[in-house]
Picture (cartoon, rainbow, N blue to C red):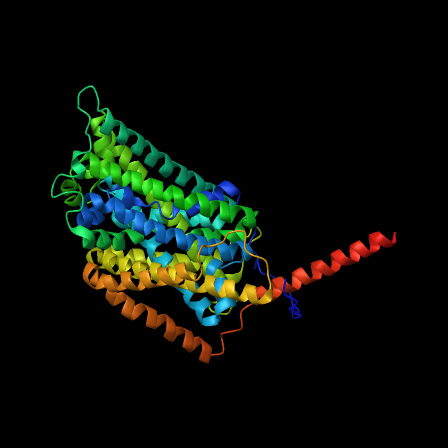
Length: 496
């Protein structure tokens, strides 16, 4: 242990009014929920169209990158489970600009995502109620999500736990039934077998470039894994719960996605899935239930999709509000957003995040053809920015702690700095690939990131930017004080 002297610093209130009321199972489900969206249930048709059956390999590649990001986040927030998650840690170890970009980027991404999800929820309601106006359905779904987030963090955690449990159960049932049909079939049908994996121009009809292109799109299926870093500030035991959630989440995601996509491309020709318009009736999940003779297959699928969309909206609003709450504590958002109620819910921050949600929903309602393309563009760039900032943060975190002689985090990313630089390179490559695969997203990156940089400089000139809390120095001071107390205790015991 280094003999570096701990600087004397004031001990700030790092919680800013938030309460630690999330249980270990709730943290685990919140971590898992963000990346289990409606896309998987509708068959991931766009991804499969790029690589055919080899989409399975694409998801493995993207999942491994997500694994590195999750462990980088877990390493820093396990030691510093503060409001703002990885964004607040970035501010402390990399400086105010990094903290501003990391938090506002994540907040904007989630605010737009929740707008898209509540519109999607309303669309699923119209499957049962065709005459329901889209704006009314959107308002109803938005109201449910806002109420859950305004009440208390425990209610949010409970609702997200059960939302996620339903999604996870649906996926497991689909995988089990899918493999049953592949190996055994039914009384009325022969076993499907593995023929669809090699028919229609082979396992990888578009070669290695198709696999890599699909991997670029598959990256965004893992968006939302960052929720675990935000939930750390309200976990009852973050040093135990965050590493546990990170460890179980990413392997579950890999298993769910890889097995589910394997079932999808095996049960029916990949060309059929790729040509799907994304409607409920053409979902592979519906196909499995119909083969098994379940007459209400489409209705069951619609209910699961509605829950998946509400769950995603619930998580997006939660993370956006917590980022705004953290930014307000650093003068980088309206200070009123830092307020919390007696139960620890940052209601004003939730309302600020709701403004973004309704704005996004309004755009989606009046210009659905263009809005979702731009929403996806911002979300795409937002995920890549988060990945890069996470890697830069974990490298600075590791270096600074070694300089100060601070103990290792209970959760540690392997091969630092090799893996962080590799993920940064992959993120840049993914962005460049968007020029061909999703030009609106590529253009959005040219606008979005400079906008963040310019807005920070404006706030800096206005004198709004303050020096972040030095989390490493604060930790060193606390450890030093604890050692002094221990030595005093030992000395007192020996004299007695």
